[in-house]
Length: 223
Ligand SMILES: [Zn+2]
Image (tube, rainbow, N blue to C red; front, side):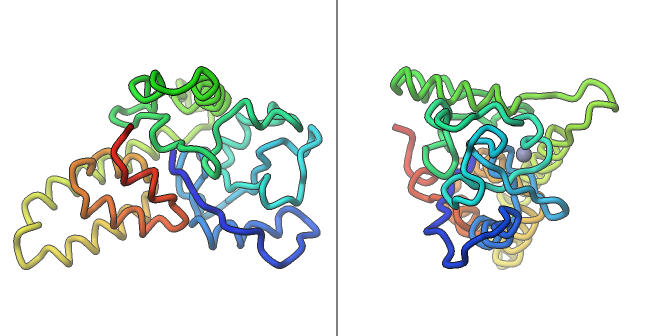
């Protein structure tokens, strides 16, 4: 899950939480803060502590961007005061807490086993809350995250094949630009980072293209 830096609260005072959307989008790009799917059509302002359960409705610190699938699953489960039971992409190293080397995101046990029990629990709680590993089993279950992530993964895998062929040729810059555009359009930062995990040049490009990414978590080796 892409760790992000939202920066300081904007100067503007929000009267409605929806007014925060363009600011969040400007800082973080139009991607779900949880599943990383592009949210160009219906970005939703998400409250970490649910506004329906006492969470602060207008506080910048409590806001993220979300797709409707993550927002729906998260619902109002996280009440005021419960924030510390979960990892958050704008506060924690969510980059290493989950794995994307498969069709389905998973908890990164290798990383988590060296963390405190508290961190392990927070990662598990967030993972299960959002049902990040959900595979829709019937067309009536609306959850495009799985299909959309697979599409991005296929683009990334194809891009890697092409890149390995052209990166030492005069076409490299054009191809690099193509990867950049494709990654931005298809989203799923962590999937791209995983596919290009051995290519620091592409990883640096991805970290800068997906604005607001907390790069120190993403470019440093796993400790
Ligand atoms: Zn999502």
